[in-house]
Length: 422
Image (cartoon, rainbow, N blue to C red):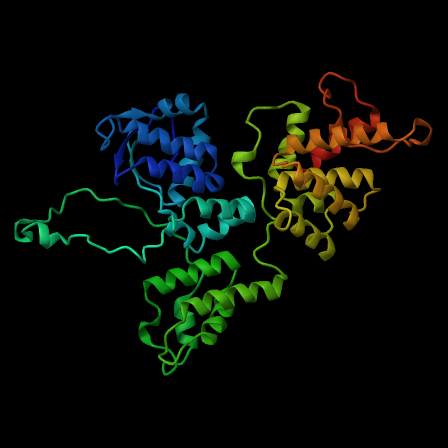
């Protein structure tokens, strides 16, 4: 059931875990690329609302969050739902003239749990690219010290204390995380019914195995029928499912069908690399197009709705995987090359420019736009004036498009660009 959230609605925050500075680091480094800046800010604001006791907040209303986060109530609701979906928050509501909410705040996963999670691990890699992903892994690795020449003299508990005096309290706080759930798209009854009982063990589909199957189905877009075939291929002699084998065949199956791992060309710019909200200038609206459109959709719209060719898609994927360009930078590159190269994505030409942009460390649409214009001007200066030809350049080369009058052709291009991506 969906509840309308109002500024006057009250809430309290309850700490369901033991929150630490390490958790803050994990949220910023591992979760922020996935959940965006507003969800991160909401998490830390709710944490701060707990106050000195760090257990439960006083009664507050959502207008307090709107003021603290400089966000509308709709943005706060979306950020809250994002936190819920990533297991960082649980929400309870009681209806009344003014609704009362209880927000239970949970710790993030540990780095080891995060990097071994079948969904978060893949999504983080897709969002930040292989280089940044490796840097993050390195950040959380244990230091390696050779202890071969050392002797372990650590005392055991019962060597120091009389353990008979210890009692365990049920209500003592512990570090808690909330589960990340994926709605089941797999019909397990259908799978069980289609595999003969003599082949599969009744206990093969325990809770952990079902979670894995649902997660793999989510990541690789596998339906029940295909999942049944994959499961049958990894049953061992005991009639149970080889979980690691299932991961491998699911990944290979996707690679065989798509020619690559889960594709990045359908992803849009990560929230933390987007322009701040509220820029409604013409240039700001162009940047928003680059940021909120996936390279696949951007290219398809440039082709007036026609599907990009497999060659074009492989080129886009190479830009995002091999060169680790962000989605918005790829979109700026597409727009620039099509304009300069007579509506053709010449692979060698694209890769030459892309390599230069990679070396320049461009991450945002705005950076890419400014860099492209600067490089174009440098190139024009090197060519003798008599040999220069008038080249088509994108309308966003004109940084003063708000104040300058555009030519009729530029005005038409701007209208088409914004109209296509409404």
